[in-house]
Image 1 (cartoon, rainbow over the protein chains, first blue to last red):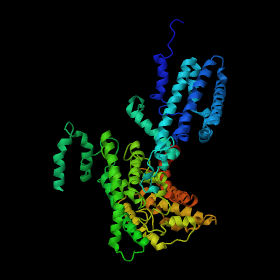
Image 2 (cartoon, rainbow over the protein chains, first blue to last red):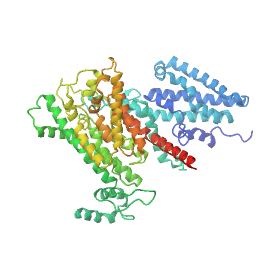
Image 3 (spheres, rainbow over the protein chains, first blue to last red):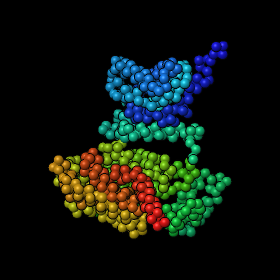
Image 4 (tube, helix red, strand yellow):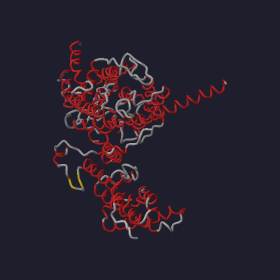
Length: 218
Length: 383
């Protein structure tokens, strides 16, 4: 192998950066919406969720890529599920051991990473037909693209819904009506519909900046 | 009139294509067509040409809303002085003045903010400014409680115009009624400012109950207001929703001019009465609300206002005639169902109308399809 590809060739770098922008799993492919609604009320759980998905997706991609030539085609879905489930359980146990509070807030949604369509989607679309290293990068990139949106949504939902960022009060206490001010937190931001609307606004902004993403009218 | 025409004619050359201020042509166009019926008509598609255009239609609706607005202004003042125990000492004008000081800022905020967003979008997209919002901006204050903070009105209005209307393509394209979207946003975002018994009377004296008849009925306490007071509208509630008489005057104007659909109005009332009757029949002791006589639902809360001004919105409602019957009936039916059986949402009318707004295209689709099927069958028989 004299003409070995460098680890971070342009092609490999694209695997990392594309999912952050123009092929973002949430805003462009519209996958993984369910968990984006559920864990984005506060910034901290959203961040932990993003990290968990990065770990699960990166390693699931690598493992599937390593065994891709020996897995019979007909049972590949169940093999993928076993791999993902095993990784999710590991992540779940680690969270329970070291970050019990956050783990309680995330409740079933860590377990539900198994059903996150982004993960199955990447295994099917990428890991099954690519080598481990590109698969690893693709996993990190897609999960990071997912996490990026999660964090943006959670930032706005926590700021307007609870007046805090990462648990710290940023809206001055004296603004609140109870303390003689005029402000109250927007209860709608905490409800799931507002997560959808926030995601929609991100999609709107992204599409008006990058016109290639707008579908042609048929 | 001539002076106004002249004024527009002097500005016109500056906003025409190629002129210096062409980028302002949407704004100019909005004001010109507001003052004068435009002499252009649609050239493409099939249209039925009418002597009045959208702007004139909207003006009629605003006139129809005026009785409710004026009564609302009076009612806000009346209840303020009533809560202070000085209702007898203050005359009609004191009450009207106090009400106006409370209500007009809400109206102004709703207009300025809403039209601001509307003009901004029209400019950005090079559209014409459509006057649909002149009505929405009048409806928004009328469905707000008198004590609502103005910045909340502003935020709800921005949300309603952007997400209720502009994202779908502006006037005529919206699937939801913008004014109700504003109220629904306020209801879910700042629940303590639009429900409970603290907000319905402006600057009320302490220890005076401001519970609406709906709240009283839901908790099973006897009504503090007589049936006549509910009918006339001397009850706490959103600014424009209390008086059935004032709303009725508006309804007559809308029906006579043919702007609102009598099918939707009558079927919604039938639907409300049906659900009320059903609840009366199956009333249980656990929910005192179910025992409220079925006809009383029509004069409590926002039912009359919603049915007359919100459900009949020609854009977000059903368009087919059969569809209008189904659409209206379900609004009335669901409104009372939500109101009585879900204590968290005393004002079911808003939610029922929004829900049916979403279903209206589906209803129309099936009405059209069944008509197509029926006529196909007919051709088969004759051939």
